[in-house]
Length: 363
Image (cartoon, rainbow, N blue to C red; front, top):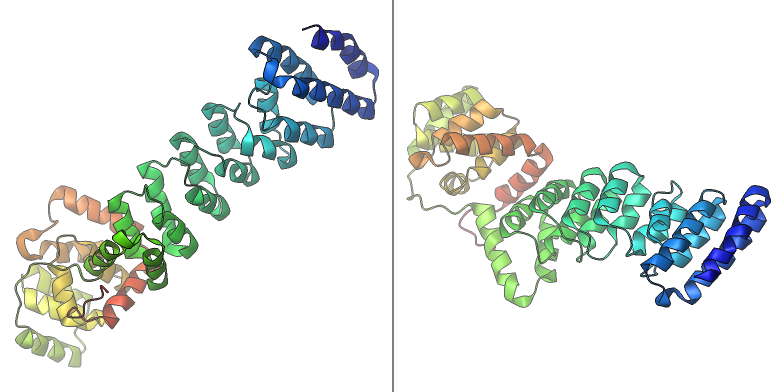
């Protein structure tokens, strides 16, 4: 390793007395020397170059650092510490190429940068091949819309269930993100179902079109279940209850309070009829929604109407068989109700209002 060693005197002299232009020329010479034989160097040799690069990086201008980053980023055995320094540079022109390509950055390096640097740095990391869950967790936690979409679009990025859950939640207000998340082959089935529930009809159709033929029918079946929450409740006669509700409506007494009273008094038919009238959803749709296994439709109905948790709880407690009325079930329902946005609830409500339960939406 006489070659890099012989550069030390020149390096010392140029660092102490050389101009910025001369330092840049020296850096170019050393970089070329390294690249010309990089595949022949072992780690001890690379470490000698590393020390030289580190000293120069601290003394050269941004343009020269950016050129160095561009040349070294794709090299499989590039000097490790030099690459870390470049990757952590505040200027994305310097850090970008290294963050996008360098195989010398460890998972811990990427996590640290994702926690502390700019959105441009996060975006550069988001396109890397094979990003670990610890990195994508941080990118999704801190990233803006562009970063999050990029992570979702990176099929080689590994995502934790927590990250998928966050993406599904954010997709409520971002149709592009919903499509990117929904077409990932690694999305957990439960979260895919939640995504379908929250997606617009346009996005739902695009997810069907993007799916493999063998999975399209299953997606349609999921959409049908989500839209109607088809339960096993027996058909009920609501004619008498509807007359009671109509009378209350004429008297101006049909409101949230009356609905809660019906629920607490176990007047199930009147409760369903009141929900139908207050939410403007066909009564057979409400009947099937309330009879489903999950309480999600109740959360959506109440959030769309602007009602609070006590009303939600009263309706859950009044369901046939007390479905979802356990302590754990109520806790989960409360958490989901708090996260549910009015915009999402109203979007699903419009879907229910336009589709009587007797119509099969699966095609």
